[in-house]
Amino acid sequence: MASTNDHGTPDPQVTPRSAGHRRYSAAYKARILAEYEGLDKQAKGALLRREGLYSSLITTWRQQRDKGAEAALAAPAGRPKADPRDKEIARLEAENAKLQAELGKARTVIEVQSKLSALLQGRVVKR
Image (cartoon, rainbow, N blue to C red):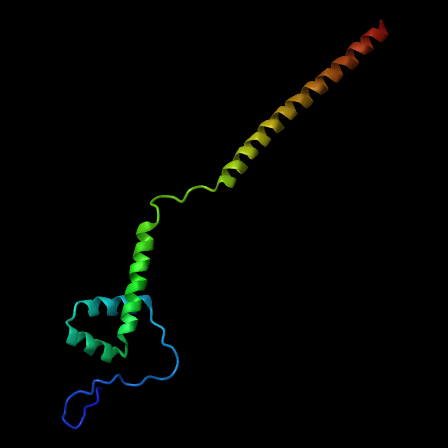
């Protein structure tokens, strides 16, 4: 409850809070900012007193909101660009697979040639 002075009018002072920093959720900040921005000067002061806030917090929260919105709007649309290293790795893996296949073929040819050579040498010796 708001305290009153001897004349029955509300006390304009902010009620003291416990020591330490208060933490505010993003939802709370957004709600207070939306409410604050729709009020006239007198009602803004009443809101700040009711919530135990200072106008400097409202200014800071506005800046945070605007900076976040600006950052979100500045972010490029679509997927993030691929890392050039990933492209190079994919190219090297494809090249490696191709060379492995060629090596397999070369080994098969060498094996066939050695068997053929052994066969031909065996015929020459038997003759």
